[in-house]
Length: 282
Image (cartoon, rainbow, N blue to C red):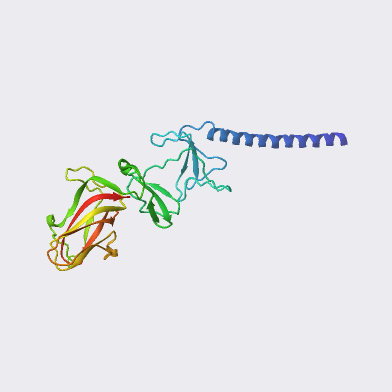
């Protein structure tokens, strides 16, 4: 009886352990099958979540042959709906990413971002293929144009270089405008530089200027006075760019004017103003 009871108990323990092992094997097989479906058998564009099951709100998905326009990357990383970056790479060596080539996808609009929070070090490519660097964090942050890009490719060269036009052209002549003379009683006049063309319509000035080299002429002056210019209206009056000393004078001065899209011009006394563009900088 004793031997029979011990044998029975042993058989029960063996059967229990066998059942537990079989259950564990079934769970492992199910997990392996799930991983195989997610990685090995993923169709083009099908999200693959590696390691853990990400939620659908802030999860990150890895896709094989993800369809991005005409591209066919081997691996794409997409943030599903989070507010942070889709990919964050850090290393104790200080090198987060090493690549043989990096391409920025152009934005849909010109200029740096106008909305959202941005951090120092972000680089932005606008619709015109101009590159911008975020130099101060904020909403939308402070951005600096990094240099000459596609919209100015035909000019060649580097930022800070002065480009002289083959043929100067007249950008502004108050004698032909409805407003007439510049007059302090009328306030300042905003003159747009960006995209200015020659009389025949051919390109004269590119976008995103740093400044223009121009010949300023005053004529039909009244009394003594000066003309000044500033990119921002609130910066007026700025340093004088041309002066006159009596009524009825015609004087000219060649100077480098600050510019982005254009500038505001202000005369301390009534005068006509003529601007002839000679060159520009980025």
